[in-house]
Length: 150
Image (cartoon, rainbow, N blue to C red; front, side):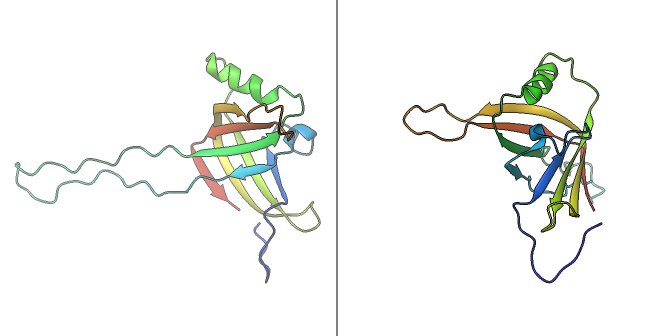
């Protein structure tokens, strides 16, 4: 699905889709997506020596990548509700998340990142500051099992 062209795409035209039919709704309007580094985790290696005295090489510490999504607070409790259910152990079945990079027409998907088995792990809000007016930002950090690109 990736569409090749001579000049790079802008990073400001994107869509977050949780497969819930609300990607084009205002609750789907995220202002920032922060991708984790996509690392190839090294598996446990076996000792090459036949000697029983050589200790096995331990696997590296597990790597837990998280996708970070940010949006301006609009009064919707959808992210809080999802996070709260996960906190209480009542989360719905894990779902997919797709990040679509959009073309200049803001409708054509030119590249996509597909995340499987996403679940919320952190919900945060920017500070409330009476002396510095600005947009209140809601941040959702989600864990996932796998990422595929198209």
